[in-house]
Image (cartoon, rainbow, N blue to C red):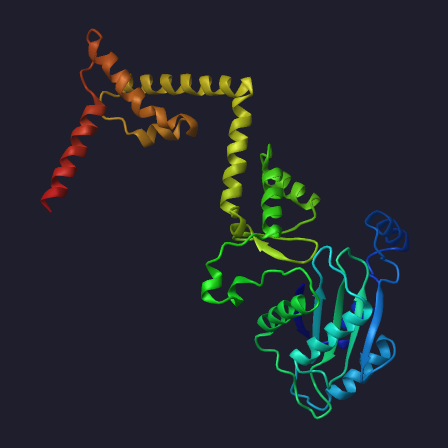
Length: 347
């Protein structure tokens, strides 16, 4: 069992979401999704319980707002709880009502207005509880530590109704319990999907397209995070795939792809030949020190690493040729480096 707690400003919008079908779906889409997923998208909502209120979304919204006026200092009077069962678990309607009453008691709004709505459009049954944080005496329900409280409530309900035990978030566990290794199937599934999306992919746009096809929303900024169809958000770094790791993998795939293309090696050979010619020409024209970074401006970045070796080779050839200059720029640069090192040791 997994619980989520939210607070908000608008009773009307929250009640609309809970009591009606998804507005972005047409009737044809609802029918098609219902057949494919074997769930109920048309008339997905069923009200299981009213507490000190009644009616449709308009009537409920007005009733909630009337009581909310008893305390005008509250900016967010809406308390919204969503409780979902783990895959394979089932509860009867009466048991769901019991879950809602226990949640109301846990968060101390059992004497306030609230409704409990069952949604049938997912394979994992879940309920929504919309409550008024303002009571008839003008007192406000305290929402502090709400995530910890709902996690503890779910653990108790799992034992009471003999449901699968779901792990609470680590930050809500005792220090000793945090050290126990745990298996998070959602993160493992995300890790596998990222690995599959990266396989053979050479650029970020292609990677994002593949990961979206697997049902994830991508939030890319200074880092990267993924949100699944249950609105659970997981950072890439939590599954070993930070934005930097993903970009390095894409760059590696691109290099491996290029190495398999004959044109790549032809271009490499051409760049190397041009670099050798430039080094030889520079050394013959200037019998003085040739600075590597000056020559690098005229060469391709892929060949700059070879320039140092080429300096040495071309200088040796010139020393051995008849009438050539005996100047060795590599040796002179090496002597200067040693002098700087000795001066640094005496400081």
